[in-house]
Amino acid sequence: MKNTEFVNSEFKSLLNKFQSGNCDLEELRHLEEMFLDADISGNIKSAMLNEISDFEKAGSGKDADYDRLFRSIQKIISEQQSNKRTINLRFNAVRIAAIVVVAFILGGTLSYFLLRNEIKSTASFCEVTAPLGSTSEIILPDDSRVWLNAGSKIRYSTTFNQNDRLLFLEGEGYFKVAKNQELPFIVDAFGFEVKAIGTEFNVKAYKDDATIETTMVEGKVTLQHSTEDILEGVYLTPNQKATFYKTEETLTVEVIKKLEEKKEELNYIPEHRLVIAPGIDPKSIVSWKENQLIIEREQLGELAEILSRKYNFSFKFKSEDIKRFRFSGTLDDETLQQVMDVIKISSPIDYVIVGKTVFVERNDKRVPEFEKLYKQK
Image (cartoon, rainbow, N blue to C red; front, side, top):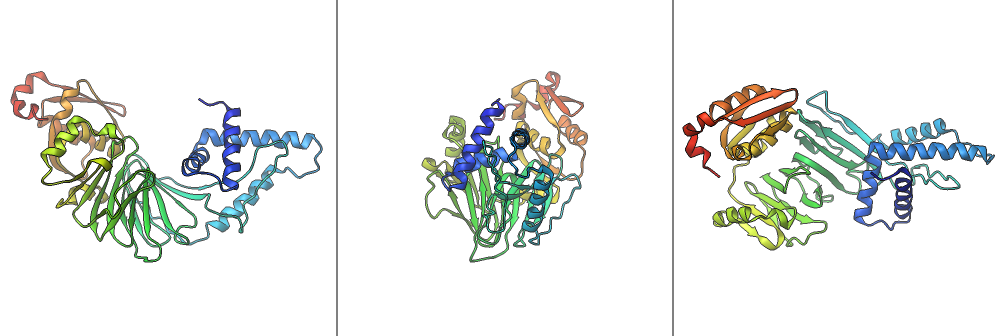
């Protein structure tokens, strides 16, 4: 872990570059992460308080009233957030945090750069999170609607719908975009960007997933990337799904083999790690928005990830091979135990739930009953 002195120095350096307008994209994102990290921001705050104390002892004659400083900041926060926006949550447990980036420099003279109306507010963000085990619905300042799946979050500037309609997604979201020809709606998922004017689509981009998926429901979107070279003019129309592989390493021999087997059905662009599948039915992909899961020949390993987010439980497999079993069906309001009971009946597995963990193992005595299923890959 980086020590406090290094973090403060790094923060000061990045903030100086930001204020001089010399931050590149990676540095801006890193600066954002530092503000959003509770431990780092706590260390910065502590260092600031220490310097305030030292400054007072030096007899500077300056007013270092920390409480008054933050009352001023809170007032500015209130002014900046006066733009009308409504957030409707489907679960009370959903946490909503308005993250305000306050510009100050930790240095020998302890100069404070308080936010004012004339100072750029691009460093001020709102963040909405749907915790594991729940989903949420949000109405953005432009009247666009966003549904967030479990374990997902979006961030957008408090100037959203003024100069642009850019938001950042981590996880899965369904977007119903209000039309605005002047300001395109852009979803940035780890640099992969989906650009729309007014349409409906789903983006799945969990941090640990190997791919980013975009599924079209209505209208049209264009695809681009902030750093990768994706062909210009790539777009999606209804009933199409684009899959972007984050790194070349994720295009394993097994993955490429499957893509080759379906080459008649897919538009595969190897040099850009992009696959477009036409003629898909988006219903099963976006069913989560209605608190329903439609499963179509899903492997148990992949299904476990979905169930983990939906019910906020973790899964432990005692053997890797049982992850290959496939399942189909529809889940509505079933409990996790009910779901696992169905899986147990339809495959040679046993399970036990201990606390918030589901332990799954193979039942060797029942394997012959499912030999054909067991050999599926």
